Image 1: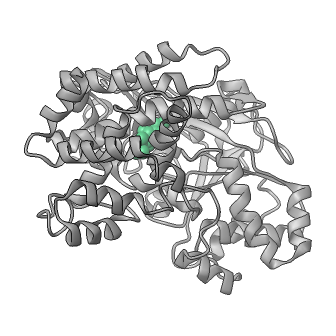
Image 2: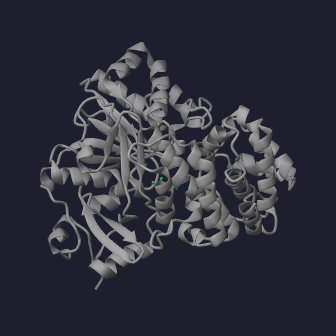
Length: 495
Ligand code: CS2
């Protein structure tokens, strides 16, 4: 007989080592909306909220909104919002059922359902993980991309928006026109100064709707920045089977993460706020040093390993970092080139953070695919690699190592082109553009780099014009497109 599915009725029958919601869940009322209920949200903000409900019960139930896949309303709905969060650390497995999500609304065909939730007076906090490209901003400048097709659509049809900025602006307009209650919009994506970028893209929309909305937002809406961290790759069938074998039930909404977690939030709110600081989050005046640390070190290492890993034939991060040459490369890059660009971070030693980050990436139970991390690199390399490179150049520091993963991102997209044999399928808003460049230029690395660095939505023109940078990236691309990319990395590392 197959195992039972997770449900409220099953909670009392779960094995004692599966932790359950420690609060009166039937009494829970909605107060937070979250846009983008993927694995990361279920492993991060929803868990912090579950902790908070157990410690200080209040109206902080979560309503999830998915405006892009995955569709979750049915899967989570069948389980009444309950799901399992598995912590996996090498051989250790720890299961916990999270109860903070009350329901998920799939709003992919039309924004109507999303707007209804976001405009509701019950909702006082809106968090979001919509991925880097969800903000529809230009990565190199942070401004709203007015040429983005969804933005052009939403500016012309503000009542039926598709984009995150368009949906939020419309929801705020409805709040203003109905109950007028203040709200905090909290970005939890890995983009630099995420609160400022979110504020920019929403205000740009609002200003086009009129002064009244723009003024109302100024007075009633806060856009704090935040740094979020926990490695939570896409769930696999094998993970679902592990829960069934070890704990005796099935869970279609399972998520898997590492033990480490961190959340640093800028202390700038509108209206009431969940006291996540009571359960491990940190409220600070300035998130910037934390955000640089995390995106340049942990995410920088992940991105580097993902491109070099795919080129070297490795599937997952933990296998890639087990390669001695790649491990040495990434440690040297972080220590010699990235670390000196960081600001002092209260309470954290950057050198120890580097070691801790590298050690997190060796966790063999976290099967984070290189291709998953490599996705949307054009939206990630600015904050993870190009900003530290810019800072290094400003002080005359070497960038020989940090330039290699930039070339790695290029090689990854170039090798996906027809002319290079479509080595793998890629997903990146700039994939077609780079494939077209590769198809027309062929294997002249210098010409390829010239053409790719001319994409000013990714590469700030001043950085793109820097001859040291151009030289290193061209040499890197030459080496990575050669028959022996790992030999090339070994040479750079030894140099
Ligand atoms: C990863 C992140 O896919 C990616 O871009 O680098 O999802 C990373 O695992 C998280 O930021 C960790 O907090």
